[in-house]
Structure formats: C-alpha cells, structure tokens
Image (cartoon, rainbow, N blue to C red; front, side):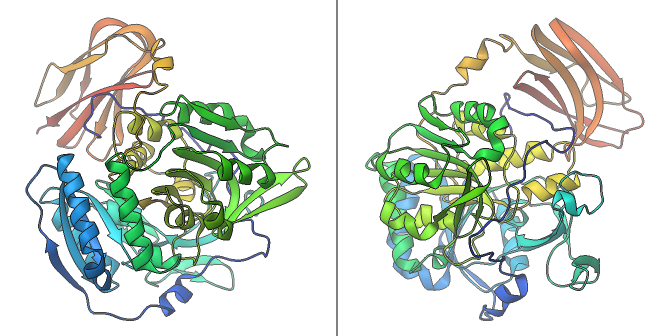
Length: 519
C-alpha cells in the first residue's frame, strides 16, 4: 500500500531513451475509433442496485456487474466473496445498467468515501476515452519523425482517480489530424491531484466470446488459484524483442524482484514467433513479461537484423493454451479491450490458467518496472501494484511524454489477485541498501519552520524531500550521503497551508511522514 514505510521509486527527469511500442500488424489495421465504438452501443437508462452488501471489514472490493450477468454469475460472486473474506477483505456486489462513465465514476467516488479501496468491472460496463497528440520527446511540439500522432483510447485511469479534474475541451480536426477547442465526449485534460486512489480491474469478456461462459470459467480459475487447486509453476518468462535489448538486463532484474526463477530471452535473432510460440506451448510459468511491437490482434517480432517481421495471432492462444497465470504486456494496444479478440483478453479468458494481464490500450506502455514489481513483492495485489506504479510516475507531476507513455495502462483481471511468489530477488539488492533508515518530525504542525531528523548509514545516496498533498515537490532539504542521524530545516512561510509529506529516499528505500503547515 502507499502508506507503507518502505516504497520503491525512480523519478524520471525527462523522456526515456527507450523505443516506443508501436501498432504493427500484418494487415495495416487501424484502431477502432470512439465514434465507431459508440455507434455499437445500445442506449440504456443508468441504474445501480445492491446485490450483495459489504460485511464491514477494512478495505473493500466493490464488484460492478453488468445487469444481465448478475443471475448466472451469482454463485461465482458468492464464492469470490467467501474467498476474500478468508483473506480479511470485504466485498460488495452491485448490478449496473447504463453506459454513462460519469455516473459510474460518481458512484465510485461515493463508495470510496465509505471505505472502498478497489473495484472490479465485470462485463460491458462504461468506458471513458481520452485523446491527445503524442509528445514522445516531451518538447511540447508535434514531431512526425518521433512518431507524434493523434490517439484516442480507453482510459481506465479515469475510474481509479477519485479527485482529479477531467475535462473535455477539445475536438479532433480531421483534416489536420489535430485538436482544436470544442467538445466531443472524449476527455483531453486531466489536472489537479491526478494520481489514482483505488485499484481497478476490468473483465470485458464479450470482446472475446460468450461472456457468461468465459466469466464463469474465469471466476472458477480465480477460486482454484486462491485455494491452491490451480496448477502453477513458480517461475517467469521474460521475453524481450530486438528494440529493447539495451534495457533487457535491467528489465529482467526487475521481474527478478518477484521471481528468482525465470527464463530470460533477449537475443535479437532468437526472439522470433517461431521461438516464442513453442516456449509458451510446452513450458509452464506463473508470469510472462513480453516486450514486442504489437496490435490488439497479436504480436510482431523482428528478425533478420530488424529487416523482417514474424506474426503471432491472438487466435492461436486457445489452441496453445499457455500454462501461465499473469502477463505484463509491454506490447502496443494488447489491452485495448474495445477491440474484438484483443490479445490480453485472449490470454486471460481463453486459457486454462490465465488470471490477469497488465497492458496498454494505446502505444507506449509501462516503464520503471521496478516500482510495479516491488509493490507486488511486498504482498500487494496486481491492481494495487499498478496504482502504486501510477502514483510514483505522477509523484512530481505529469509531463506530456508521460501521458503518451502511460495513460492507456490498465488491468484485465480481478485486481485483488496476488502472485504466489513473495520471497523475491530483492534480497540481491539489499547488500547495497541502508541497514537503518528512519525519519521523524521535530515540529508538527508547522508554523514557519519545518524541522526533521533523518537517519541512514551512508551506504546509499539520500534525498530528503518535502511534497505537497498532490505529490509535487515543494522543497529539497538534503541530497547526498547521510551517515547517522542529522537534522534539517526549511522555511515554510511561502508555502500554502495544507497537508505535506516529508520523504527520505535512500537507494530504493523510502521512509515518509506527514504534517500540516498552518497559517
């Protein structure tokens, strides 16, 4: 949880020198547009009904189920509630009809205010869309050479952010493929406190096949996994295609924070569909981390020194039936759940062991994987790990290149599921971490002068930061080697009154305390 004393973070100062995942398909297909998607929807009046009330435990999963699916899924939902009760997690279930993203968001906010910490959207539930002109190099200009294009895409961050300000101020000018003032029911602005507050997962099975059959099967797998009946092999496959060879060793080590036992493939002439397909067909893994250019219908991998492409089709997944539970798909648009037969959904719904896929609904995907895997390694569910990852991405605000990379990220899963392996490779890094790390306030609440005492053993470089309630850095109190306890102070007279956080960063460790600045 974000309240944990020890947190992992790497704050990126600018756009990363990493090749962007691109939509690459054998038939030059294009993403479904918002207008076309909306034209397929049948108007329905908005209504939410309580199916199963919560039991009053701390921390609650709210399950929102498409109205027509409630009756056939009720036994599975009751089993899920019983399973989570054994894990001391509360569950409430609601029946939903209607397509209004704003109405669902308003209900989520009201539930959050009464203790809901995570939400699961089951079936064809509302979708919020976002649009932007990509700015991969972060220079504020549209550069064709960098692949800056217009994109519109489903944005589940909208539903997990409880207090940010979302606005629709722009429309696409088709003739110039650009944005001009206007409204079109697609969000294009996100300001204020933009970090997510709740974990969110989505199970849009109708995009893959018969939703009643697939969801019943999914919840059965969920139950068998939680009760130790689902056959799981505790290792990972890390498969990285040509364009990300420079990052491969680091990204593999990030997965190693969760899975010490893993198969790591990154040789540029080995990573081909001809190699990938038999690996997922004949071997078992708990986790697959795949980096490749893709499209919703599959993966594209380079060979012949980058001159040729291999194609993997999502339609092959049912017959292969990979023996894997979880997927981290650094693969363009593999989680674009508005597309029929989307690849992430096929891995989850059309396999005997598939339980979850994390990926993007657009180009770009997850970077700074260490924050995600660290959160998992300390016992958080996949949805919370993505929420933590988002929090640290937006910790110091959100730049244009970060929106391009990250705003499509989402979970196709029950967000409370946890990988089974928690004795992790982080032990390998601990030799370089401080043996002692502590932080305490010497003045709280604060009037004019904030004083803290920070302690480390000098092993790793440290920073002591002051951040406001939205996560923006208000002051740096210290940066350098810190050996033993040391006191730091900062004048706060120029800062607005409110809640602030003091953070001690040493290597990958964090200690934090909160205080109020008064006037």
